[in-house]
Image (cartoon, rainbow, N blue to C red; front, top):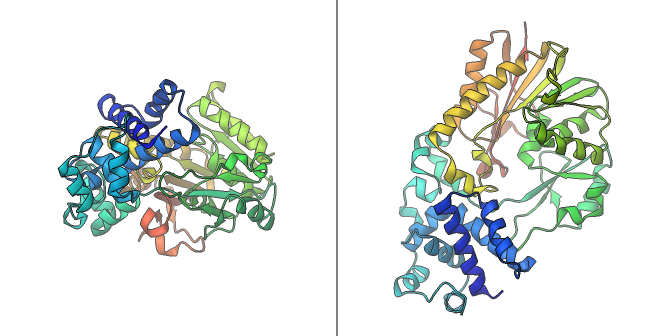
Length: 423
């Protein structure tokens, strides 16, 4: 495909997302099925352009003076991808291109409207209804933090100590451009790709199939590391999902003790089984809800219960930019109800002296500090334990909880609170 056809395809994908409210993955899949002629580079180009447009559709619309799909796509090319006006004009004017540039578009490309004059919600690329929630969570820094959340994300890797050590793991991942990510010795990072580029294929590295490393955001790795020394302990990952944090916890346990993985959706646990086998985990029990009472007998017996709670995912919007435009206030309220319920259920399995760790990938106080405070009020037998993990002190809240943000910590947005059962 030539550039013009690629631009037209991206505009068609984004229009389908906007008018039919499809998730971006579905819209790209539908386009790919109808465009069998498109090669891998074409698909990567269209996907990258569509995702970049979703990340910054408000700020680019402001700069271009045109918030239509076409206006935002042109904004990506001019102001994110640094295409020259000549290249843009040539591409849009091709036979299968979206049509020649207007005089207004030419002017906006050459002299964009200053983003410094935009309201916070536009500069930070988020919906207006989120303004009071983000102001509460991030204050005056909200536009800058959300702008950081509108950039492309790096790919973070975790060296798996069950299969290798840091020197050998580092050598293996260096082949795909990964370097130490900081904070944790097992964490490595592949920088975010440049415009229209693709991230190296992680799965193609032989060490990946051997289980030497996993793909996991640094923030997620840090959240799991707040569990501290857990070798020989009895651990439950209450909302295990695909098993990312289950595997991180299992690696810290060194195949000692016992780790249980549970999730309300049994289909999600299938990935946990597959991934744990590749990672060399030998102390894992899957407790699926299809068993009827999967956690029976574990009440008040566990040293650690880890709750990666269902949430809005607002901290991961640089990876899933379409999700921020689909989120509603009703969905936020629903998540808070679910979070209260899952904390109450998980607490039953913590023994006296054991710990309950609550994690979300959300930036919002309503899903984080508020939920912890409400839980502690309902459960006076639990109390907050300040997080003492080395290297994260600057990210702790006044209550001793951990709050990671893209601008501040360079990770996805994560919140973690540790509570101990005292009675």
